[in-house]
Length: 140
Image 1: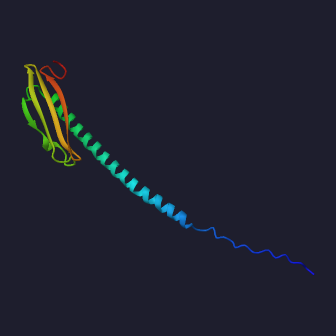
Image 2: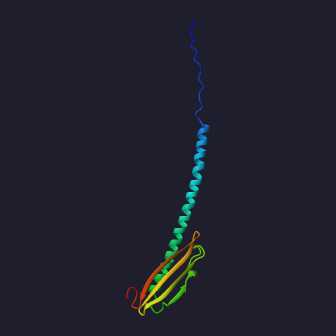
Image 3: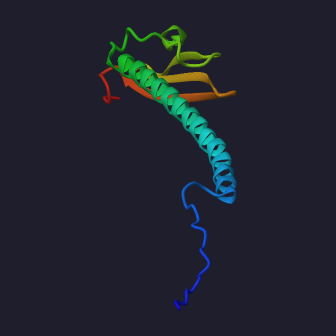
């Protein structure tokens, strides 16, 4: 007589797929990360716009200063001069650009360049000052 040992069969567990807990955790992590990434990208875009505007305004003001410094001393007339029309349309309104030329002494003129523009709800003003002499740039 043959003794048979009967061992109960164990069910094989299916290890494919995700458990409910894993799905809930991954959805929660995803739900927290997406808004954070979107907020970060929005902030990055705002900072990029601000940097672009500042660079454009700086370049415009520096070009104006250099064009005035390279002009003939007599051709640079005293008084206030508006050059707002030279500001590109990408700079937010309200925007103004002007320079004021004043005579320090008969051989020296002072030039103050000022550019004001809207920087995301706040008016920002950049100012520059330079001097030109009758004998040329840097020759006071």
